[in-house]
Length: 486
Image (tube, rainbow, N blue to C red; front, side, top):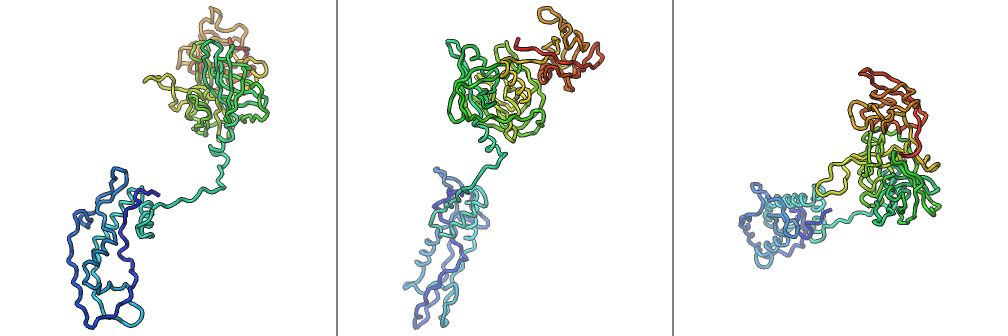
């Protein structure tokens, strides 16, 4: 409860009974009744029914003051004692009859002006405003009534229960369990400048493999250095096991890995629904072990991203989330409400970096590689060190959008855009065909088509809808494969 009003007196309750004094022996002649005190005019600031008290304001030190406050009860008692006749008689009447024989009647005490009740209410209301609510005001008034207005108004709160525990499934509980398995990655290139950056990864298995983004470790892949730091502050050197530029996935392995590693559980990204809760863990702008929350905003969002060099682009049919993701979150896990990994945070959409900004920041549009895809890639990299990509054996136009993915007239270096005897050729596709759907998902561009192809495995049979000379048709393609990045 607020103590901003501490030290200010509040008038006592005018209806409270006073303690009955012991009546003195009456004199031989009854004294003349004391004249009624002449009513004095109320001060200009005193609240009346026609002129209520002003609201509470604050002094220069921030302590609230109440305009129109009455004098303290002690001051009024002193004034009454001064106005009484010499000898202090008659005494104030007892609120209840004295026990024993009746005593001589005494004149009634003048009734307290009703307008002072208005002052009490005004003081209580002012306290309520300052304290922040009716409950605060009532608590302040009750404290003053209890100790006569001379003590502290501070009310101590009870201690938190010693048995307080965070229930399983809460963000705090999920984060506490996951953080020891999330690492911050420092990558430095092998050049003289030692350039690099900070990213995130997570423990994949007990052998010491760490899954992250390719673009997090790309600068250190050739002759650079990598270090991994856990949430407890312990650091380990690491090396690259394999990288997949197209998927933007990489696998590291710790040197001298500890024996108590706890891999994060992997969920099923195919079962994720829009609106599901998400928890992202990473090191945005180098702030390690940062936890943010959100929801799944969309699924199967085609995303094409690059590493800034223009030489290596990645494509994903991403999970979109509004959990705050910033530079440094890359490679970190996107968890569901149970703490299982459903994606790898990889990219964000942001406004242009104006106003002196050198790095983009989160505007609530983050994208993660679905964990089902990332798991397949990680297993390939751990097994062979090289990625394997499903392909249709056709070159498509990567610039046009909105009308589908058109098979180009010519391929790279003037070669045929449809690989002879390849998957597309066997399915009957030709240059100029426009692919509009792949596996039931709408296709609006070349990057979208690649994103959808890479959600499958080599050997999968997928139905394709396409247009030739403005006429729709369907066919089935059996995906081929390509090993390594080209």
